[in-house]
Length: 314
Image (cartoon, rainbow, N blue to C red; front, side, top):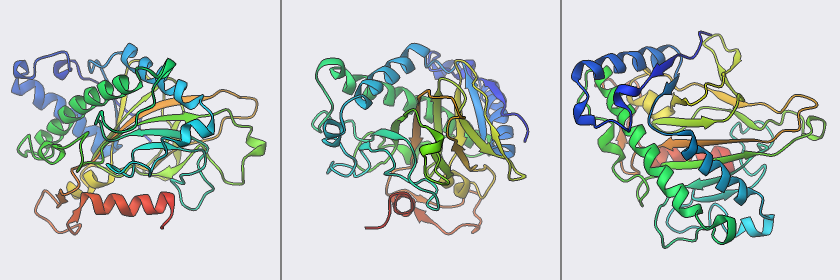
């Protein structure tokens, strides 16, 4: 597998007024993303405007939540929120991203709905949980929308082609998810046969932004081998997800990836933060080249199919 490219995003950074970005700069940057997403499906973006301090705040408040007792965390369980069934805490082994393996050895907290009226963890070290998660959700949204514009430009489409189908992020009617992930220390000898921290899977929506503090994710190459992605300090790892692959008639590739158990003797925990961009629930994803390579499908129906694979059918 070729190395995942590292692309300098500074000309379209969140710190730069988009009105000041020239067409030539956008074309150049979009061409680099096109090259990465057609060959590998992943790219590292550096100089995005999202700082290490911002990410560290999310990790810190998330770690405080994951340190609570099971009883305390269960109050916020996924499935208890009327506004969105994917919002909330997912316990250890509750999810199987590869349905043929035992439950994944990870916990997560999904932030999907930003309403102040829903139940948020609060008090003590969690007093700013809502504010930190909400702020970072908006920052990721802004960066993700810029990436979507570049993808459209690279395909010679209207720049708003993909953006306009993500108008409700953070509200009812959209399942875009900011996901804090916690992988506790695991003794490999005590894991079930075939169990991983995160089973082999492709992501579901349009694109994913992943913030990690050290290596851990493995990406499947064209030849079928899994290769460890490096850690690039200060960079965000971006990948194509399933609906974008359908949308672009396989021009952009949604690649299978996973997180293995720690090697013997490594008792470290792992944290990461992923931002899964999903088109609005009512968006009908059709091949943007006018072909019928994939039949049209509603965003929410595709997502529901994948959730049933991961969590089981009720």
